[in-house]
Length: 220
Length: 217
Image 1 (cartoon, chains in turn orange, blue):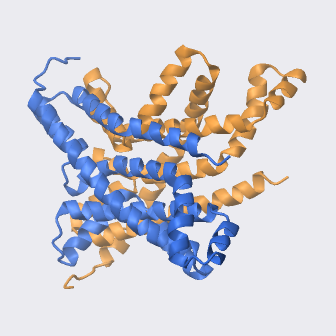
Image 2 (cartoon, each protein chain N blue to C red):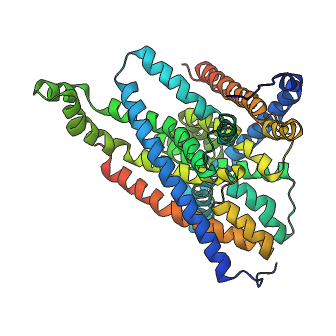
Image 3 (cartoon, chains in turn brown, green):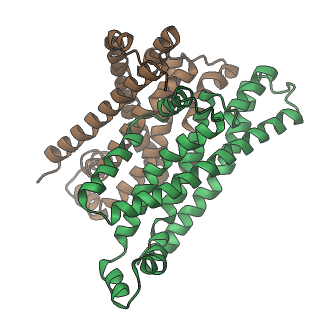
């Protein structure tokens, strides 16, 4: 193999890449937060049994789950221009991942809601809580506990999906920064190898802190 | 919004060719992923913890790094080692290895779900290791994990969209090409979305039906 590795330029631009990793985490976290809220809403719509609520939720969930995430980001970025909606690549990526997260999480939450016994709601209501109160204080906390592990996985997915922003021209997240440096220097392997290591570290840090958090939150 | 553009039958056929390319990449990489996954899964299920954990840790890397970056790295390996593989092969091998990381866990959980007593009973009836695996463990395990395997295959199908980054013209990339000619992004992306949906949704439904039907009572 007559390929000469040159790691010096990569090490020199490491701070830039770390900044990119921060943006990646930011995008993933915001998309996850918005996705969770939307997913609870979607799951409740599906559970409500009312057709005019369940149908749009179904369309959202099935579209999110049965088309590629990249396609969803593409449609937001290139497609919605025809409707006069111009998204920046950052917004397209963020909303694309949010859309995707919400679809997948809604399905997870539907299972989670079924894990909360019906008697819990009845007990809450008979203690004088209103229906929204029972939902917020009794059902949703227990549901989130049941799906915590699945949510951790989704969060990792969210980080990995954020790498697709570079395809719609984002240059501030980890992959975007890496690609820009790659275009300047043509040290493709070195830059992307370091990016891969950073992604690995970020997702490992995330899963281990989630495990720690679960241990803190869910012991009785 | 203007839908009356010049999106012709030829353009639609071009998209269908892209869809065929997506399907063939999916089939090849699922095949690679399943073969490797069964191999690693069986090794993981039946070896001492230090071998099992080492394989697990290595395969975990493929699940913690974005596929896009894996594709770029595989592609640069291809030129660094002067392998001169066609891009199609690079895409398939990369996706296949990626799929094998998930398939390994599926196979392992399936083999783990077969009761130890059943396996021991088979062995004490005089079946060899290979016979027991073929006629006892695998039939039971396949029933348990087939729905998740379908989920994996569909996931790979959706991930094939990423190979456009290394220059393979699949469904999404052909949509881009058609768009640059017709200038109707929303219409074309809707058509492409529908094609993806039709490729994925029926199989996803089938998986869900089988899961309900085959679930162990």
